[in-house]
Length: 459
Ligand SMILES: Cc1cc2nc3c(=O)[nH]c(=O)nc-3n(C[C@H](O)[C@H](O)[C@H](O)COP(=O)(O)OP(=O)(O)OC[C@H]3O[C@@H](n4cnc5c(N)ncnc54)[C@H](O)[C@@H]3O)c2cc1C
Image 1 (tube, rainbow, N blue to C red):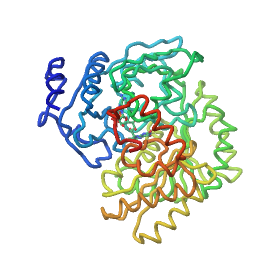
Image 2: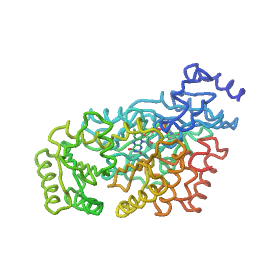
Image 3: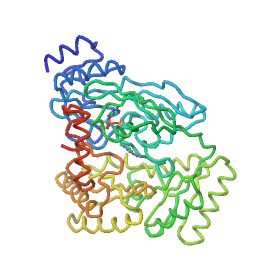
Image 4: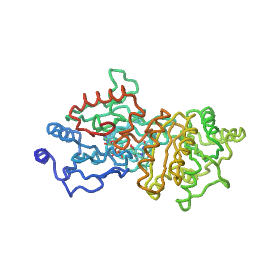
């Protein structure tokens, strides 16, 4: 490592290359907080050229590196493993250009998601990617984890928003695939190799994203539902009634809803009674009045049909914000609940209700004092499971039990957070041996010395 540090010092200044105790503990772990580890060296390049030089030297010296974006990941992927050099993209920030006709934005990978959302908004455009970590996560991290969020039901995951990429490979080669075209079948579409591969195949340095016109009006309602079967029927009815304007279909089981209200002073339920399920529905339209009429009449029909028990439509932005605060209350919960197994899994929508009941019965049989909180982006198959007994030693066993049951149901062990290190040992529950073998073949071809994010996704 000394030879490498000498070579790096010859091309990098002190703000770009940090050693030992100069490295703040912010770089020791991602948001999961699991297994923090101080990297011996932290590199903070400012340009693609600089990053390419760094990787050429690391490749020459067989030096493993870990890539760090905004460190909001929940799978331990950006947490350094022993002896790895950390490379942070935090200084590669900025909006390069916005094309208001083609509705695209070109950005550096270290740009925080919220900065891009706001820049698009200044042009009456919108980047339809949003998640609770918007202020800290970087677009390079979003691309590398193929992040989901709250509008996937309408616009798809990050993959669906990316038109082009620039990537630095393990040996320092810069691959520029900064496509801005919607239709481009000229050969392999290489960007898909890097989207969602969690930094194991290349370092994303620049991104071209597809924007949308900013919606003129957004309509939000919090609804009460009596059983899961009605929830799945409602999804079909709302898709039929609201068409492509349906942008949110977020379900909260009563246990989750009540717990969020319990730990959030000042946050009140708009309903007088309690219900087994609460559903947050969001709809966008380009005409405020027509949109409101359409939204309310579609909900009214579902009240009449009996699928909905009750519904409160937000009359002002503050109402909608309050509803979303309940849905996003997981952030607050994780601060106060102690050791929690926090899983994001995917299953066919029709099976989620049965899975949830089965999961609750099995976990309660094994851990009688367990609390299980369920919620999720049900409109896109995604359910979050938050389970805890308050005892540290149970956390890992509970996670293991949830993963095994997901395997039994042929679901996905991770819907959006990625495999990283924390779910690596469960990959075979969701991917066939042939798929894993092909993933390894790709890794060996693109990163033959396995220096990029080694040990993430698979061993
Ligand atoms: C409160 C909260 C809410 C969240 N909500 C959601 C949600 O709704 N949907 C969702 O999908 N996720 C969610 N997440 C998880 C997380 O925010 C996302 O995974 C996000 O995309 C990670 O971005 P990041 O920049 O923080 O990446 P990091 O945590 O820094 O890194 C994540 C992975 O990507 C790699 N990586 C980072 N940048 C690059 C790059 N430029 N090139 C190559 N590899 C790179 C890292 O090595 C690591 O493996 C949430 C997290 C929090 C804390």
